Length: 115
Length: 114
Image (cartoon, rainbow over all chains, first blue to last red):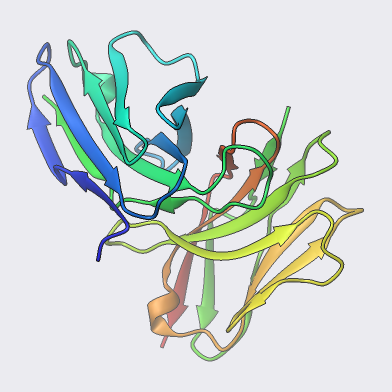
C-alpha cells in the first residue's frame, strides 16, 4: 500500500495554463506539506497544513493555492503557469506539526514541465 | 535562522568500503532533529535515519550510522560496506519548532564503483 501518493507523476503543459496536483496519505498523519525541488535538486518547502489548517506559507506566489479538504488530502493548484514553475513537486506528511522528531514521508513526486 | 550545509557535491566510493557524507548545521533552537534522506535516480525520497539533539548515542540503522557531534554542529552520515545500490543523492535535513517542516541541505551525489 502506498503511504503518500500523488498524481500525476508527469505533467507537461503550456505557459498560462492552470493545473492541479493531488496528494493523499493513508498514514493517519496530522500534517502535510508541499515541497519544490528545482533543477539543482534543492528542496524547499512551500506549504504546510495541520488538520486542514494552513500553518506554513513560505512566500510562495499567489498563483499557487493549496487546498486540504481533509487531513488525508492536500492538493496543489497552480494558476497561470510560468516557465520557472518547471520543477519536481513533492507532497509529504508527518505525524506531528510540532516537535522535532517526526520524519517526513514523501510521495514519489510530480515532474512539472512548462513549455 | 536554521541552516544546513553539505559541502560535498559529489563523492566516489569503492564497493564494500565505508563512506562518510558531511553535514553541518546551524540553529538557535535548543531542540531539533537531524535527518538523512536518499534520493535514487528514480526520484523518490527515502528516509534513512534520525538523530535528536538530546540523544546521547549516535543513531544507527543497519548499514547507516549518524556521527553526531553537537559541539561542532555536525551530523555526518556513515554508510558501511557500500553497495552499488547506494549510488544516489543524499540529503541532510533539520527540523526545529517551526511547524514540523524540514530544511534541507544541497545534497551530495554518491557514486559507488564496482
